[in-house]
Length: 215
Image (cartoon, rainbow, N blue to C red; front, side):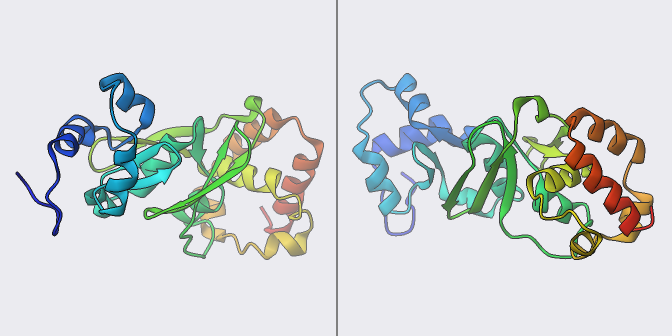
């Protein structure tokens, strides 16, 4: 039997690991469907022993995945869905903002929420169901996919959810990358997405941004 540090896992843990390691992360309902008699006390015990990582209430992953490339981002779309990565995380990924963003920021049709676990800090901002668009599935190294906002939708989500960015001064404070604005941003898509929001306030903020950055 394989040992984990100084812990020798019992047969119940080995069976759970063999079943769910391929899932990436899993929840208690999936476990109960697999084994209706599963002892829920195992979760607390195995987390304490370092054999499991608690992601949020009812969700778990295996600790070896802490080193897996992009796995922290993958979890974001699994533990709170529907959701997709957007806002500061997406804008940093595209090189639109200069800051390195450590927290993982998402939007969701569910209520605003946040979770902290060993993989990182996760923030979810609530949007209306009709605004849940403008993302694509980005493949990561192990073949899994992450729902990820396009550059244009990430920018619009930010302006929509943070109404304080409504003057040239505050928009310039974002320090948006001018090369990215000029050469990467799809202006036709941006215009189309702005219209889909059907928000005069957002349209006004976007016009102010265009003026501020000389687009």
